[in-house]
Figure 1: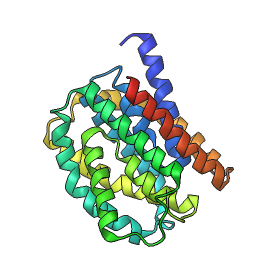
Figure 2: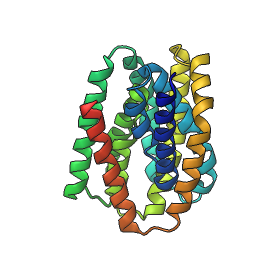
Figure 3: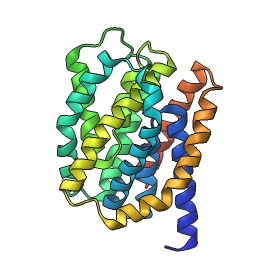
Figure 4: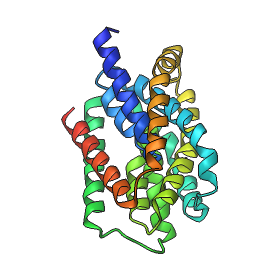
Length: 240
């Protein structure tokens, strides 16, 4: 790996870590399409899951007390069923096509969020299960299960702290299943471990900075940050 590629990788990972620490999600959305331009998608997806799990381990204890379990548990159960299916498709789809499909999905989710038409108060179980299943499939497919859950949670009447806690706990649980699926598919290797260890310090520094910034922002800024992040990622995935 040349020095230019390495510096770009560290910068991307630091930004992703900041995003995760600030909002409780989003690092996979940045890392998967960006790092796939530098490394093979299979290597990237497995590394992203390891980084996400490391981030979640530090954030979960604080989030547990704020998590709305009646919202999260149905999402997790339906997601778990589809994670292995997504992991299977990971080996079958062409990388460029995969990135563009995901970019289109993210853009669609953002547009729905901006319309405000998806706001709910008492979501039906069928909708909750469908959102969880879609997120699980995308988690297995590319380590990017965030958009359906983010749209769903950000369209609720929850406060930012509750949404953030729900994100953290949901992704922590589904990523354990994803890691097991990747292991069974032979996607976890020494190369993945080496890349993970080299990128981890930049990710941790970014995450700590993001956590500190979160304590100093208001509800409107939080929502603007989330929407802006998704728009940027959608554009990146579509043009890559």
